[in-house]
Length: 104
Image (cartoon, rainbow, N blue to C red; front, side, top):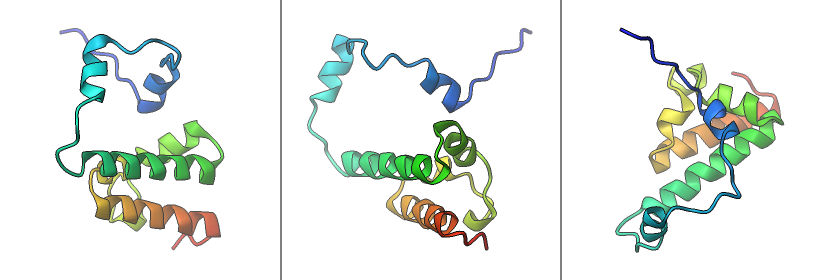
């Protein structure tokens, strides 16, 4: 069996061409009306990711931290918590403590 290459989120993000046109199927999906809290959760998660980049002053360092188990988050990986309001709030709180120099 061939070993599959593993990619980190930062590897994948580095390969993104933000100026590339969006495929038609995605444009249709992008125009759909939200049926619940999808947009809010997505925006909140994006805000937390941006907060991490600001705190670590590096996209690469932020993504490394977001993918690592964090003791202040009960050993959870921050990325795994970004799917809920409570998880986003917990990650944002941990980032704020790091920004203030509180590593407890």
